[in-house]
Structures are given as C-alpha cells and as structure tokens.
Length: 168
Image (cartoon, rainbow, N blue to C red):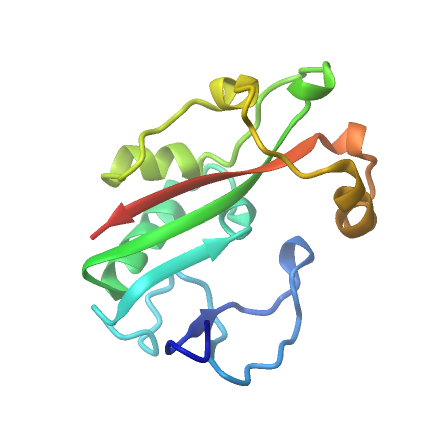
C-alpha cells in the first residue's frame, strides 16, 4: 500500500493494548499523538481515506468528550466525498455457550448515533448469533493473542471484527 500511496500513521507508541512502543516509519509519515487531539501536523481536508484497525476498542470508556473529539478530528482531516473505515475488535462468549453479557466499547454506538454511516448499525446481540459470523480461530488466538491477554480462548471469548464506514 505504501508503495502506491502516501501513507501516514498517528500513534503515540505507548504500547497501550499491547501495541508498539516503537516502529520503523520508513515509507510513511508518523505523527506521535492521538486522533482527537486536533494535532496541527495533520492537515485539514487532506486525506482520501482514514482507517483504524484494532484501535478504537482501546479508547477510554464512557467519555463522550473524547468520542466527539475523535469523530470531529477524523472528519477534519478527511477530504469531502472521501471515506473513513474502522475495524473494531470485539469478543463473544455466546458461541462458546456461556453468555455473561455483551460488551462493546460505547464509542461504536456513539459513532453510529452521531455520524451518518454507509452501513447500518446491527446490535451486537444480533451479530453474535449470525450463523455466518467469521471469528478468529482458536489456533490463531493461541499463537498470537493468548500470551498478550493472559487468558485462554474460552476465558477471553471468540474475537471478531465489527466494521463500519462513512463518507464525508
């Protein structure tokens, strides 16, 4: 991707959520900050596409000020008629047969309530019971996530991605 497009990354590199503390920024521009802080190194109306993968689930819980600032900042840097795509990790224990509760970072419903999306909001309870739901395999979890989470597949729940997109 970086060979065909100008790519930027905004990340404080604090290691939060088992994220990196340092990266090789060869081939892209790195801004060490958080989206939502209105960093002036990120130009207004500049980006054709804003993507986050496995990021928004780490935002502090129940803080509408932070949620609103993230949404405003994304729309600030996004060009008109361009897209913002987000893939948010979520887990379910429903498919393991032990449903305690459905948990999701409230930023997802907040975004759907405050931003017109191209896809419709589907409640997590419905997503989790969809027979076509694709989720992470136990082998991949054990190879890549078990050490970081300190939990077994059964304890953690089956990870899947909740995705949404909007056009500015």
